Picture 1 (tube, rainbow, N blue to C red):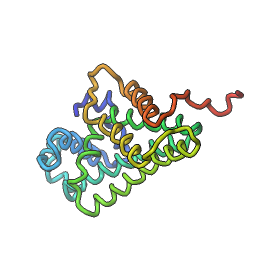
Picture 2 (picture 1 turned 45 degrees about the horizontal axis):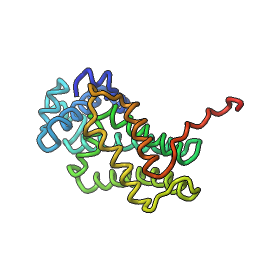
Picture 3 (picture 1 turned 135 degrees about the horizontal axis):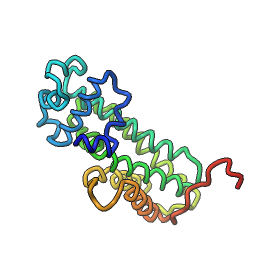
Picture 4 (picture 1 turned 180 degrees about the horizontal axis):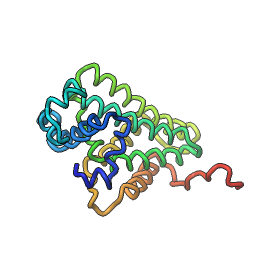
Length: 219
């Protein structure tokens, strides 16, 4: 992850809650290193060097390399869950809310592609307790999407035979964007989000619908 990507791709934004500044710099450096080299091939010296700090300075803020990965994974999954929960609890039909959920989830995975790659694909490097915590968050992510699909099926708006399998397929599509998205490619995160929202609505047998009108517009 380059400095330019941090600025234009929004990679810094997920870590605003991390303080002090040195701890944040180390977290961003860890994301860079894990995405580029993989968790197991990255050393604490690599991370500290990217942050412009000494290896000893790292241990002031993080006891282990795994603690860094756990913090990254926790923040990333919290953000992803918040995105989906906002869409699921929003106004509109199941189709409108599913389109918003998919579109926003995909935009996050494209715009935060470096972070998302680490969050989504380094889970097995965590120890049992940390992994169990992240898996619990993933189950909540799954539940938000599955709940929208279940509502659409119940109302007759969606034609889905296997809700569990369809939920897994939808989430897999969204998450995989982090693996291939290229900031210099032909599509923006917004364009990919719109495309995938349309694809998912077709997957569940719903027609694409306009977003709900803003509240209080007098219509």
